[in-house]
Image: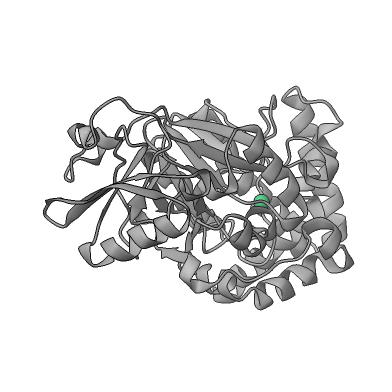
Length: 402
Ligand SMILES: [Zn+2]
């Protein structure tokens, strides 16, 4: 994995870029100049392998040339190297200027509001997003960035919880649109981002003719733009904060959750379930082919260990009643598994089981104070036929193993 730049510097010459990896210094400066920067202070050795240069950057150059270089757009008051006062190699936190903010971009999936989210993190130097959504929502994503004053060039990191099309489907198309973004994905999902053909085959088995309408075109992400993570707590410096990546299988084998300790937010993808804004009901997203309830339970324990102050599921938003949310998910997963297993044992078809589970699920949702219109909205993130198919597959595999 490439090392990440760990700080930004400011100077009255406009923008100072800081980076390390001396071997790259001249090439990096050249690249910045090529993008329209004016060199004003030259390259300075700061000590160790850190070097700094001053440059007045045009907007298009005000971005990460690579993740080894950090720039900032902010106007500054100090002398050319005044920013050094805020810089420390060993303690990145001193260098993080500007307020980090997290925004939710509603991708208006299928014209419905608040079904699929992309989370935008902005700091004073750049921006990062968690989840791209599908290609069918890409225009909404770009509109959302613009609405928050973020130029496509500013997006330096794209963090993907898993490769499913509703979470990461737009990545290949975004490679050109977000020219400076590096895409982070679980190592098991990595090959499917580089070559989505198997993923598309598997998705076509589930969605059939609706593939294009739902997700739009899915393209590969070039490997030089992809970084594989194990989810062992790797730290990713992004937009003035540091996110940690956590392996959280269950919904998929290759699932990550990203924790941002400053805000306490955990970007949970699908591992913390589906819960729409204003609702308390948590629906477990259990589509085929990789659902693993045992692994999922361990992931819920892992989330408890991380102890976030808010859970941000991609479907949808931000919830602060973390423990209540997690125990509801945990109980419902167990309950649904038994419910489906029992009916498979009675020889019921998956359609019959799906209809019964829908009755049960909707009744529980209404009992939690939700309106009946929300059942269809939850369906957009995971409908009962699909959820039963996923659980049935898991139950069958488990039986075969015994
Ligand atoms: Zn999803």
